[in-house]
Amino acid sequence: MQNGVLKDLGLSPSEIKVYLSLLELGTAKAGEIIKESGLQNSVVHSTLSHLVEKGLASFVLEKRIKIYSSTNPQNLIRWIDEKKERFKQILPSLIAKQCVKERQEAEVFEGPRGFRSMCYNFIEGVDPGTDYLIFAFNSPLEDQDREIYSFYREFTNDRLRRGLKIKGIAPLIRKALFKELDFNLEQWIFVDFPTLENVSVCGNKIIMTPWQYKPVSFMITSRQLADNYRDYFFSIWNNHHQLQQNKSKS
Image (cartoon, rainbow, N blue to C red; front, side, top):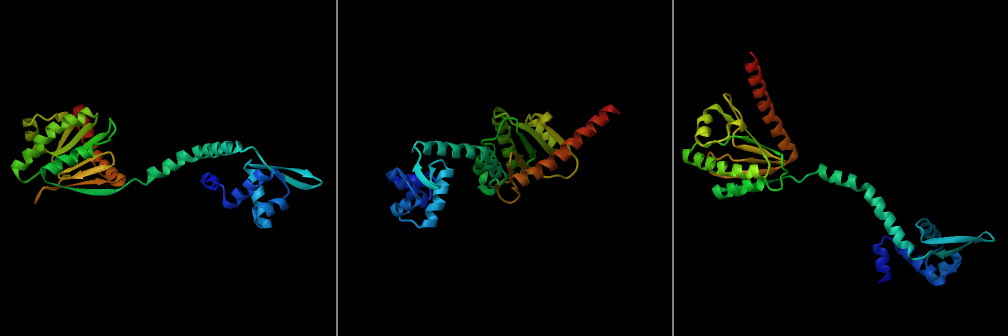
């Protein structure tokens, strides 16, 4: 049991043998430790140096001969604490490395029920104040179109409760429908040129709902892809607001 615990603490097999030999011998020359531990001469000498460096052994010189002894086993606790402190120093860099390589995956959801489930998964764990960016949904089927927008109207309340900042881009021809459904038009801009549809971005996720043929939705987790879509969204959003400001000044 002793050997197993000492191994778990990070001591090598030779360090364990030499350390336990020193505990039993009290004080000893290298030759006595070689005999007690059963290890080779070179192994014992290098191991003794390691134990001294770790503060687990010490020596005195008697007529130019080193006499070794183990330090108090309590020093093992100090040695462990030192290792812990050194680990704490590199912990931030390890966490930073982990954040660089975020998980990337794609999930598929089918039907209106799957679509609803996807939408709630989409905002799970997102921090308050995060932008929820929307390229408006559009379906060639009017009933399907209205069903989705009815859900989005109630889903907006959940997004706002979580503190998300909703911004959307929609074709100009959708403005009448948005007014009819009592959407907050201040959260939207309406454009008269082709742009993306059926795409939303929040955090490091993107959802796509290309329902032209059948109601299959996709949720992609990818920081790089989300950033690309976010940049494209704000290139349109910011340009639109800049044009509006210029018009108001003229």
